[in-house]
Amino acid sequence: MDLIKSDTSSRPFTSANSQSTAIPNDVAFAIGECALGKVIVARSTVGVCAILIGSDAEELKRNLAARFPEGKLIPNKLELRDDLSKVVRFIETPSEGLDLAFDMRGTRFQRRVWDALRRIPCGAMVTYSALARRIGMPNSTRAVANACAANAIALGIPCHRVVRSNGTLSGYRWGVERKRALIVKEAAA
Image (cartoon, rainbow, N blue to C red; front, side, top):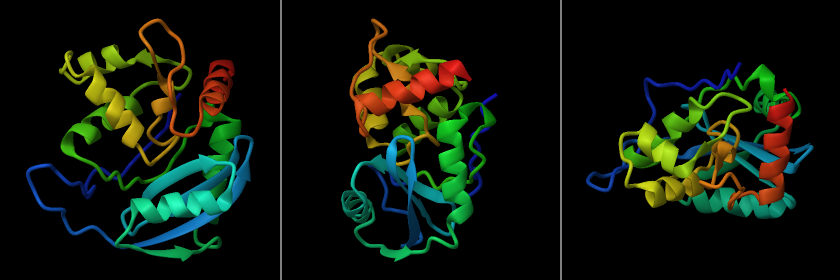
């Protein structure tokens, strides 16, 4: 069972045709260790707005700062302790789900792709072209891949569940080896 949840009532986004909505600028974050390396979890007043995975804590902080250039980044391990433990637990036991509210920031198209990704069950995979068909845009495979690449909420928006049309693994913002490890872990769940 895949229990990835998000707040659907107030998810801000930007559109190519509109100005940004009022997005909270302060972002609290915490960094922890997991089986995949370092993980940073960041939260706005709306919900978790970033889950980034990597090998170097400073690089993760720079990545987070680049994603929120107008925001104030506030280290807060105490406030994010529960979020961080849920993410680490999800990596170890993906079948238990990831029960967090999300602040998904992106264009309408990206959010459409991300919503479709969140409906892919734990342990299942889909191709980029199948995902494009699922959102009713069968000729937008490349745009779907770009939306996956723009995802800032690793695991919460499970772009690791998308593979090439021949079933092989393709690029993953946090490394193909991490993608492989997540897929293997979910398949065993």
